Image (tube, rainbow, N blue to C red; front, side):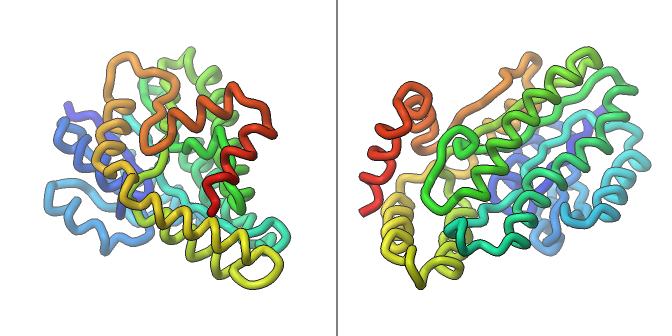
Length: 270
């Protein structure tokens, strides 16, 4: 019997790459996203495509019920969907800040709640939460995004302890800089929100620094393989840190004081 895997945010980037990797490993993959038209390549490989909007509870319930009705089981949930809302704290509308949490935390939590009962019934399962090195470090103008990822780290740690007695693993993947549309979208949002006004000088430096590092970013397939490994290996680690600058930055943040890390971080914004 094939193991069944749900992947949110499977229409692009790491989610799509992971879908192909798990499909190749013999999993029955359900790719979920708002942009179902972007997943025809998944269908072509025999994967299932399901519409999902993490800001709408009815679509979350319907998506999970679809899998349970068709398969009768869920072995893996990969919470990959998310985005980065960048801008000065003073200038990001609170409604947008709430949406950032709705997608990156509350929508993620809701689909997890709906999957857990089936995994408990099976006495087995794997929940893989895609966090970020941004759940351990910080960057200028990323306050709301980093807040969601810091929250996801602690939330996942608590969930891991709660679900261990039921044979369910909870794993965190912390990507560094990856070649996806994520960075471009985040910088576009930053420029739109804070590109004019009191924060403009630093905004321009942040956007410029982001552009200079584009050719150094890790290929998305590397993260797809890492996520697939976290989802399928017999004895997973609790955390997987992978991608451009992930290990050095998280290590520096762990061992250096706040002021020193601030200086190192801002020295790159030129």
